[in-house]
Amino acid sequence: MNLAALLHRAARAHAERPAVFEGDRLLHRFDGLGRRVACLAGALRGPCGLRVDDRVAVVMTNRAEYVELVWGIWHGGLAAVPVNAKLHAREFAYILGHSGARLCFVSPDLADTVIALKPELPALERIVVVPSAEYDRLAQAEPIALAERSPDALAWLFYTSGTTGRPKGAMLSHCNLLTMTLCYYADVDSVAPGERLLHAAPMSHGSGIYMVPHIAQASAQVVPAGGKFDPDEIFGLFDHHRGIAMFAAPTMVKRLVEHQGARRARIDALKTIVYGGGPMYVADLQKGLSVFGNRFVQIFGQGESPMCITALSRAAHADTAHPRYLQRLASVGVAQTGIEVRVADAEDRDLPVGETGEILVRGQSVMLGYWNNPGATAETLRGGWLHTGDVGALDADGFLTLKDRSKDMIISGGSNIYPREIEEVLLTHPGVAEASVIGRPHAEWGEEVVAFVVRAETGAPVEPSELDRLCQDRIARFKRPRDYRFVDALPKNNYGKVLKTALRELVRG
Image (cartoon, rainbow, N blue to C red; front, side, top):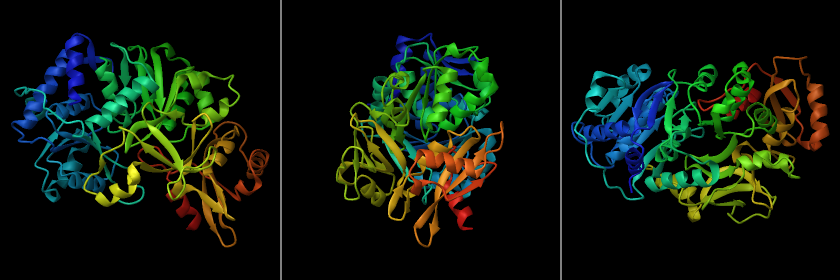
């Protein structure tokens, strides 16, 4: 089973349909994309000398060539190693070295950085800048037949963000990504020939993985010409494309909703926004629904179970008459089709409905394990379940609500406090743009709650006393922050997630 067969099926059945756009410029139709992918595979397995199962790294900002590269790697029976373009040079070096990648494709903006690393990477034989004359020659090589692959063959080696030590390489098989694809159709969104997937988020992550369900159904890939998230460019593309789906992190959704272009954009061109990768607060989601309408679907997944643990459907977003509507909006939905989700205690025993514990996952979407890391694999997959490290609770209807990462939970006076609950309350204040809550060491209570707040640009400045009254009205007294720190911006990583480790350093500093 080779995922590239999905592309070639689409190329036969929908040869003349558009396949790849750079902005509004058509680059490939499906028949042309299929030929180019087979030629790239021929170059990788021929002139480049790669063998089945070799790893090929892609260190690129979003470019149209990303599409043909990933599918060419798969066609040739190789494994793709997508690398976040925003990482530091030392992180590039670690991932390239640890994965043992023999060849690396790199965009021009990162070429000098990666080329400078080559002397310390003995396995890395070749670096190809994209675009270049060298790349053009590879794309015109003699095509080869589709390589045979087993369902468990490595397709995508995804390195985690490494917030707690060195990044780990989650090994995702052809079967894992096919499972994700079928779950997309069952639980996230339909896809029809001629529609569009707009890559506003990094193609090295969820947006790139979502190529699979879209290309399988002859939906074209639209890569913004600017190669990065730009609300002006995204809204401009609504004038040229229809049936647009896009994946976006909550921070990106928030920027789109608040951007002035949202009021004059052709919203009818937008079909679906799939959001995930971090908490979407209810207040922000309600604003999004008011601006874009019922076009939202939420997914919860991890690199270890890509885009594929739970989903909150479009119908759930629209079901305002449900008595627990707001609670459902605050959840991440129900288990995707064929995926089992449990909430367990420290001994992996199931917890009753409503109780909080670690989220465990089992299904064909779960990774093979971590690359060259049997110890971490055994620990994370013990008992046959993926131990996500996320904390949450299931309700009686099977809706999962995330609390926090286990390491972010605050224990004060023996009571567990989940920062997200407090953040949700703070964000209901019109004077608060962003909020992040952490625990600070306390001699008597163990920890106490500290809230970092970014004030909204409009309106009167919010004061700590107002926020304190708001919390006293909404949550238990022991949960309310003992200190409010007002900051210009929250520290975030390359994925847009708030760096709570940096905030903890500030309060301890």
